[in-house]
Image (tube, rainbow, N blue to C red; front, side, top):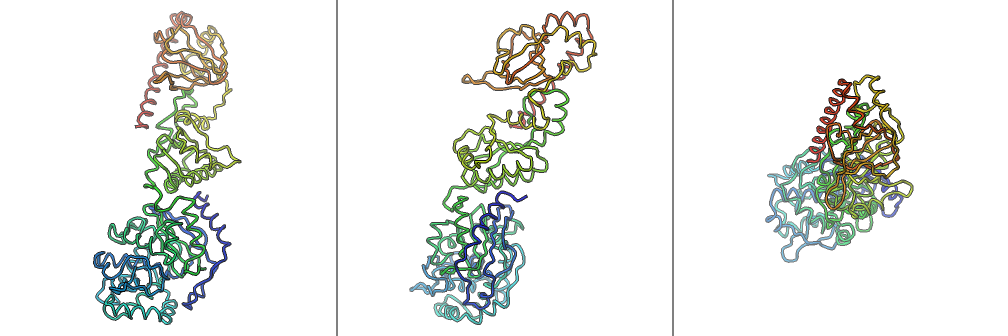
Length: 603
């Protein structure tokens, strides 16, 4: 099943596919042969997961996008101090093929225009032009994570028609920017522009820049630590030529375009984006590519100046209902079912401010657990905020998991900065997020789905764990001395601190909550009991005051055993007393183990 982010990209692709403006590049004859209708979008996370839609596999030539990676290679080989004497970092404000040189030094204004790119190609390490090419090819392969080929037909077409670039190369030679034969270096430049990539390659190359030079899948380092900052800075101010200012203002992602129809965009530490659509605007940038990046930036808050953090920090502890069961005390048969299946209840603790990438990481972790999940509980206690895009992604995930029979519920959702975006993201035709006051209530709801306990289920007196192993004849004697009491929803059945008054309650139908007082007059539920369970049983061990209050959550029917009648019967039936005390001791031990596990799960 498609993930929410995959669905979003598919919808975006379908929406933008109708854009027909622009035309393919024709100044290089081979580029005029490309299929103008091709359109692909790919996004890669920092742990190497790729989301792609449309034409992400067809190959095309990288063209000017190569400038960013060859600049990174020259920067690694020569160092920033030396490279800055040969190539500047100032926006030119001119077209990509302009002859923009510093009037004093003759140095190109930046490495993203043709003049600067030809210079950086000549500055890559290598004892010969052939060795330089091997260095370039190897470096670009590392950024892509695979071996890339050259389109020889496009290379020859570029070389045969590159008269303006030849003039630029000779000017660079004249100013001492290029050493040796400028035509030989120029051929390497033509060849690097003719490298074949697909949309997925571009996204991984962008993600490698976003990951400070480490490929997110191969884990190979493509450039020295810290160099990506320099490359991305130049991409942000110069990567889109004379559209760079508007791009940075409107889109806010370091980017580089190519006349082959490709665009890469980088969100440092979060995503790499690759887009392919050959129809170009008047400035040589992909029309659909720009539109897609604008939408991604706006919808998902990817502008470089937007507050962000590591996506993995959005998710804290992950655990299951097996190690943190609810405080509902259940009959032995349902308890046995939960022992087998409670691990299918998955708790995920969300942290901090969640942006798109944090929500994507959470959803992907959920997807990885889905085969072993009956429900998900998102604990929002430590979430301080949620972007609209993250809320939209979580909502899409909730609906898709629900369609697979896996509900997603929230607990401890109290921050308006989290709640409000979720409410806004919920569709009008669904019931929105199911929210519980605490994890215990959320866990109980998920457990009830597993054991299918209905509120009006009736259980006999003999279902109590206190009477396990007691002979039926003895049970009938005990039952004969009980009386039936009914309580309405909301009634306080027992009050904390009052006399125990020697009564033990056995629930036949309905549900009650056992609560204890905490600070500021509030109460904490310590147990929820249903049919077949009992409360007040500590009176059998001599307790004289009630340690907790008990409230009827629904209409409740109980059988009540008077302690004096019980004592008289037990004196004449010692086997009955022994069995009940042993069962009670076992039950208390089970509750203690459960409490320890619950505390450990929260540690």
